Amino acid sequence: TRSPVAKLLLFGATGDLAQRMLLPSLYGLHADGLLPDALTITGTARSEHSDASYRKFAKAALDEFLPEDRKDEEKTKTFLARVQYQSLDATDQAHYKQLSEKVGDVSGGLAIFLSTAPSLFEPVIKGLASAGLAGDTVRIGLEKPLGYDLASSREINDTVATAFTEDRTFRIDHYLGKETVQNILALRFGNSFFEPVWNARGIDNVQITISETVGLEDRAGYYETAGALRDMVANHMLQLLALIAMEPPARFDGNAIRDEKSKVFRSLRPIAPADASRDTVTGQYGAGAVGGQIVKSYTDELGKPSTTETFVAIKAHVDNWRWQGVPFYLRTGKRMAVRRSEIAIQFKPVPHSMFSNRGGLLQPNVLVIRLQPEEYIQILVMAKEPGLDRDGVRLRELPLNLSLDAAFAGRPRRIAYERLLLDLIEGDQTLFVRRDEVEAQWSWIDAIREGWTANDMKPKTYASGSWGPSAAIALTERDGVTWQDD
Ligand code: BG6
Image 1 (cartoon, helix red, strand yellow):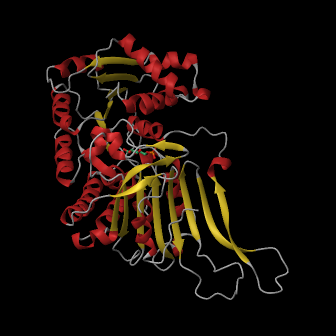
Image 2 (cartoon, rainbow, N blue to C red; image 1 turned 180 degrees about the horizontal axis):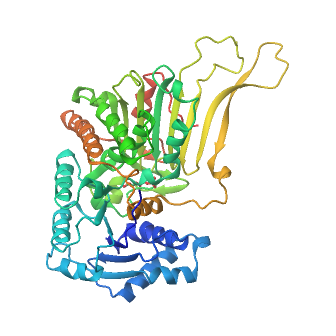
Image 3 (tube, rainbow, N blue to C red; image 1 turned 120 degrees about the horizontal axis):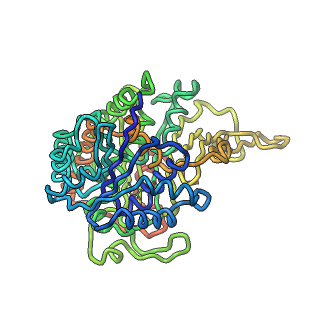
């Protein structure tokens, strides 16, 4: 049951995320009449702004980041009329009283969106609680990074829990807000023919790739302390893995789905330190060319030496009945050949081939779920080439293609934050990450890091614009598996 709040409080209201994602998303929801009529939005951050100057700031962000066809002067005006601002020094407890006065009565419900440096969790939660901004009618959305290992994430979760119960805590993983990610559930549980082969008997291996072409961007401070493993694997990649690997939930319901994901995380086989250099590969981008642009190496961008990994590939296993023996290959990196998020599920080969196939070997079927930049689902199948076949049938691998872009052309494509902010405002936790999930993710990640430290593993340099260090190719080739790179 959805229970919309009457107010929204945005921390970090002048930050990058607010400008690029949050304000445009809220505007999008407003423009389509999806926000509760009376919803007011209070922005807060350290910078000084009056309501009027913050509205100007917000307007500039909309001008810059909204797609042209979404812009509408009248709707921008009515949207900005919902917005007000209060500056806040998050470490000064005296400031929270002013904030709470600005927000006003929260008996009709308040949703808080918090994306903050880990060091600020404690004072912010304390300040909110003491100013009456954490009661039963208040829920809180939390952006990553929620810690950098299990211990620090527990600390943050404990701090949050002093003021917010779990059913009022909404941990964001923006990948869960993506349409095609939710489509994994539709595909698996809305169709009958995948599930009988969706196991170690039917599936040979699963490959999950999130390759990016961007580099460090303006995030040196954060990225240097995170690295690819914490930045992408500990959350987005493991969420994708869980949606692929989980057992069918009984209901489309937040806890039913999260129970099943959580079981997957707890079934991940820990990678022992002795296996770290065999089952994981780390890399750091060197100079190179991406999409025709010459780009600098990571350390040149950073301006100092670094051993932070910008690429990681891992061979993972889910140790349960369904997945015994099926490798899950994960790979993510910055400054790679193309921008692509994709899951490729490779099925077992046919047990016996009756074809001599002059075209080459029979290829195993592959289900490709492309999340971005395009959105499609393909099944690669063997088909007969036209011809008289006088010296044998010639088969070729071709895609059965479900283009979600084309099937739903003309429908608004919502960015992930629109969905997630609306769910936060309305109180639906299905697409948010529960505490037990986060903690199980971190324990698996921590063990990998320990292995890197124990073996003194340093990232291997790869050329910008490539598919990562060659060791990542060896990681699968060793098992006779080739990355699905088309
Ligand atoms: C963020 C990471 O969570 O996800 C970034 O911190 C990364 O480093 C981004 O670039 C990728 O998101 P998307 O939606 O562009 O695939």
